[in-house]
Length: 257
Image (cartoon, rainbow, N blue to C red):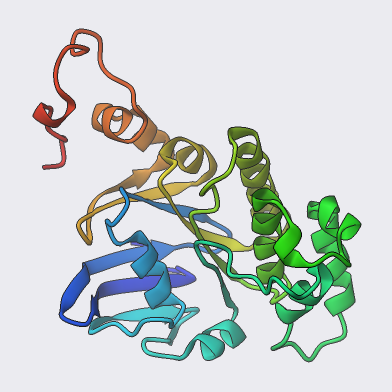
């Protein structure tokens, strides 16, 4: 257990009406750490982030951020405390310009350093400065993802929640965006919790990882060790051991079962 965790999630259970999406999830993020949650589509990864950011209220469990219980707070209250969420699908304002979208990310701020942070975003993603007066809806998918991450940075977060940042992007763009994610973590000291289906890039980027299946954590470890596990290699990285090439995938068993 991380004694000085910036985020501590304990036994949360979240429902969509009568359907239970996550079942007793517990995880932690240390200050300045990158943590990833891996899992197949529908495993509950997005629900975890939505519950932490206040979009969904957990039926049970507790969420503590920087020593404060934030369970059940509204999304705007969570943002004001220093947690910014980049949702799956980016969810920008397509008719506003790039710059206007970025300024929307700073709507909770009252300090005088918004301009400095705007320039910081342009440093990480120069294409956004080139297109600052263009409508956001006209950007490419990769540029929209850059905008979504930058808009979250404008909130000056201490914890950044990223939901499937690689979704729908070409491999080269995925590599570029995850390189920037590493830089943001290293240079700004922002802790990051990222959920991903692209296990390879997530494990290469993060320090610690959790594997979620059917709403439950089934494995957790340092990412370097997860990358060496045979079950992770086969079921999440698409690699097979020598001599099992002819076996059907669904007849193989995960070691955590």
